[in-house]
Length: 231
Figure: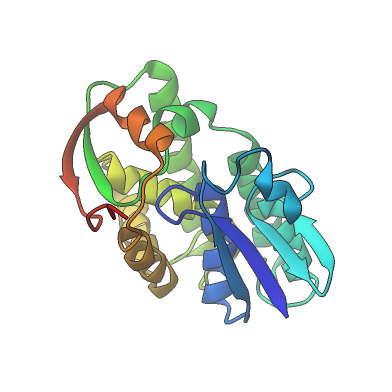
């Protein structure tokens, strides 16, 4: 039985990737959620992950850490994780790898925070460049492979890797045009994404470090999360 260790759903963009991918493909797993801050004091995540980070997949004692490695591990055992056609598969792997290793400004300035909506003060040129590159990748994939997903007719690992970006765009009010706009809404509306969001909004605890980042970015215009527990 697969066990997927993840972080807080409201904040953990990296955890969202394999969670959505496995849910979308009907791959059964047991989920173990660990809170940022509280559960990782003194490297607590190292109890299950050698790099002390989430996500981490455990399969009968075999540990696979890092979201891209998890995708490849799943692809060795389940069809459809990557596209079947060579050209689409090559594009999907390149785009996912670029998302995995790049877009530092987008990650740093638009941190994952599912349950809020933020009016951004301004976008730096570097941040706007990252956004433009994401949209260009989306439009390229949709045009080359016919949609409705980035590499063809079904959700594959490349879509899962851009799922956190879709959430960020929603949080920070990033509007996109044309085919990319339709794709953004399609990804946000996917049942696996909706399930993640519902559970994220139900978390009645906060990570102060993550929430404090918002004040440097803009003004919160809506907070859709349940009230914080006083217990």
